[in-house]
Image (tube, rainbow, N blue to C red):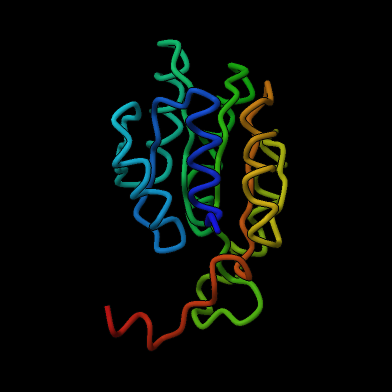
Length: 170
């Protein structure tokens, strides 16, 4: 059976995605590996999520389709620069793994996890949510066809709950 990450990568290929910006994230680990291995894609590791908006704008101006992979805690870093997507009508697809949901061990993740959807929406980004692995690829496929910035939020139920033990054994 194909994982959601493999299905999403296939959607990226089918949509002609050529640039993938990402901040390293365990929830996106397999998808990042697939994008890095794909010779038709340029995968760019970012220092911070807001760099991804500039990367996407440059790709779009150059005629390339791009996507941005981030964790919900990074959404707070991009709120100010999300305005460029609406103002310039850049149809960026953002795939965000959620933190701060039920079972979260790190209380610092909760506030941004709770504010992620509203933060995107107040800046004009359409939001969809995948609550199961089977929903991820179809939502990403729809987002890739959209003519506006769209974020697909992947529930913590899909990526799994991290624990303090997971963090200390890395």
